[in-house]
Length: 77
Image (cartoon, rainbow, N blue to C red):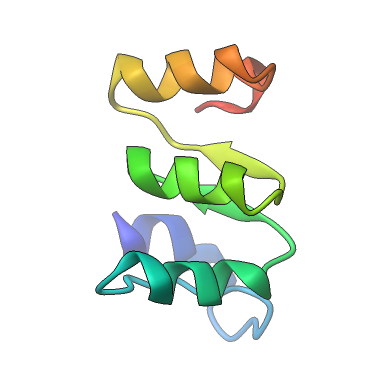
């Protein structure tokens, strides 16, 4: 999934794909982000909690549901 999401951004320093090992590390990464594109439910939640614009790439109803619940249902792929 990572390569599918980032393939069009090769060499663009503004785009980073990270897989932090723990929540605290994820929070550190998100604190410097301008936007979040997340494929996993908990990363969507972390992006929302960090008050960053979030686009969710969803494969589960729970992700679509939470994005709709916070008024961002149009930002789910």
